[in-house]
Length: 214
Image 1 (cartoon, one colour):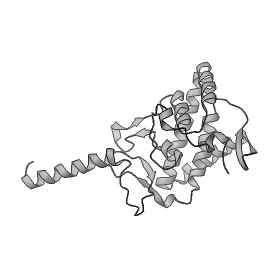
Image 2 (tube, helix red, strand yellow; image 1 turned 90 degrees about the vertical axis):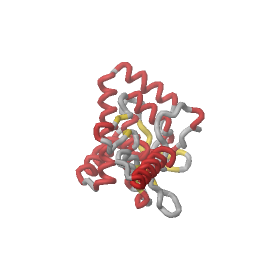
Image 3 (cartoon, one colour; image 1 turned 45 degrees about the vertical axis):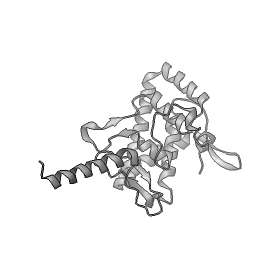
Image 4 (cartoon, helix red, strand yellow; image 1 turned 180 degrees about the vertical axis):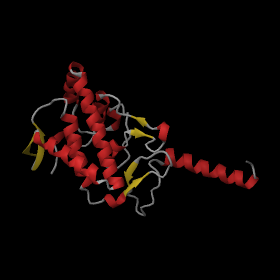
């Protein structure tokens, strides 16, 4: 089932935005999973969604909310910071649940995500627009980003091409993506980032081995 018109709409042209987040995964909900820098890097791991404003910014960049909705959400957050923070925490929790579901086959994470989905659709109605049925939130409140994200995450789990799901082969990166390359041999989230860094590392290791340097 498609979600709200805002979620179905393609993200705005990148040059119209000050892009803060990565959009390399082939599905915007996988891009959400990538809102952690150095996921596998231990102490280097860094959270990108550190405030409710970050969640709203990601939603706008990803086409999940419009600019007018974002302005309302930020105004609501300014009035109720505690609830806004709880909503941010729930978004992060949902993100981590779908990661564990997809990469660890975690049944507990699946059950938790299903419960979050039931809550997300409880506050929405099915409405027909643009020739299709879509979820329509009843109100614009602080829970709106979470509801749309959870519905999107559930839709992600039902894609029929998840056999192309891959994780960057950098030891610390942890970013994920759909490998749509013809040979299914994409190794890196970005050839200009993790790809270049790992190729350089391998080159210097080979040179060191040739010269016998420690």
